[in-house]
Length: 318
Image 1 (cartoon, rainbow, N blue to C red):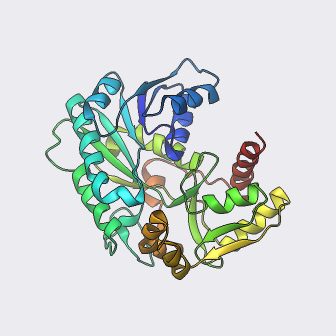
Image 2: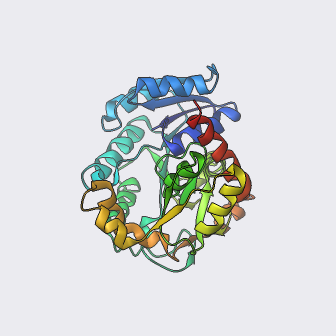
């Protein structure tokens, strides 16, 4: 891979994939709607000559075709808001696949684990899909669209991430907790503080995703992107307080609390049906990655949280 385009390059996963590609000497095109955000991304990389940007609309496949015509791989990191998933997720998939197919490109789709539903298990990529939520069922339709036989020229793969954290993270469950601690303010934690959950550190995820994308025999398949293990909210808060010295209270939000807040907040209303992810549930097996790609990078939680909080505190002090 010598050239790549990252769709949704200014988002949480998009930014780390841009960084990982640049670290490998790949020429990268950052694609998005906001010129100011794209220019800021260029500046964050010290105007690296291997990084350029193209403005475009993820729902307009012609703009993707124009931007991606000379690249080797397309990384699809753009996403839609929870409250817009019903109307926009499948059109997004149709647009990116239509562009990849018209160009005959390899395309990497970054997705989550809603397709598995509430299963208490550790599963590989062949584990049965049992979605019980509207979002989970939509994600199954999305997968079927990506791997549809109507795409004759594109080669796609899907990488599946659990919840995540990291310096570029923006909309994860853990984000309000870490932002609050970094700012030394009272904050919230979504879910039960005692339940061990899986989180992947975004720079680790990017390394795995690019490793997978570089192998031609990876395409046409789903790939798990597992985290460094399980950790409870209490443990995360304890480590974060040790790092920052900040001791403000963190309030856990239960499903009932979020349902009440959802009466007044559209986003929180959409969170209710996926609160099962904050309980004991599905854990991603990395066996396939280890067999076919290599060692799974596992940044220790203390190290990952230290770097994440350093960046968040720096933003607070600007």
